[in-house]
Length: 87
Image 1 (cartoon, rainbow, N blue to C red):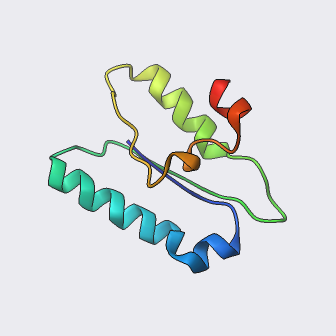
Image 2: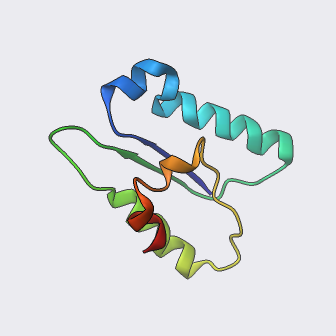
Image 3: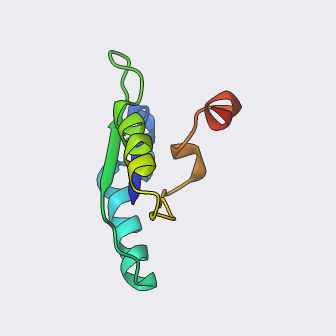
């Protein structure tokens, strides 16, 4: 499972673009012989907020309990603050 997220144009400019994250994670999965069964991507802008694909990923994980790993470029891709992490 792969999850990528950007929340600002600055992040994209700093090398954290969705394509850069996905390439890094796919390369890592290949090196480690991990199979990526699904990819979830969220892009947040000033006009849109929320992470609909994060929610879909959580639903997918609940339906597929055999999935043991979610690859992310940095753990902050999974949560924005401690409250998000706990819930």
